Amino acid sequence: MKKRFFIFLTPDGMTYSSCEGIYPDVDNLQVLGWAEGLTKEDAFEEFLRVNRWVLDTNFKEVICVEARTRIHEGKLFLLKK
Image 1 (cartoon, rainbow, N blue to C red):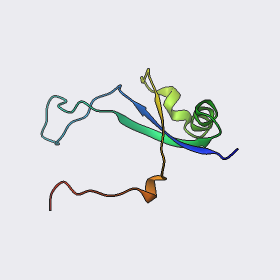
Image 2 (cartoon, one colour; image 1 turned 45 degrees about the vertical axis):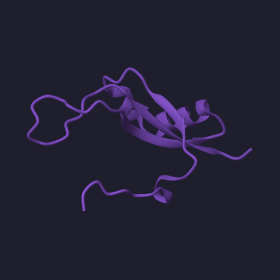
Image 3 (cartoon, rainbow, N blue to C red; image 1 turned 90 degrees about the vertical axis):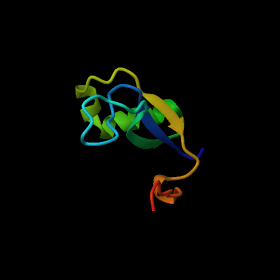
């Protein structure tokens, strides 16, 4: 079997759309990192092995999503020109 590529996200935490913001105003997911594995569970174990810092945070939930392309192969879109 070929290893698959997974991205790990969390809904925990807050995001501000500008540095002037006092209160979080973006409802989103934060990317924690990525890893490869034969299964989601294998990839999560590898993710934790490489990113031990995650265990020292207050994040409670991690969502695993399989990506069809590597991040460097993705398409870049500009919001403002």
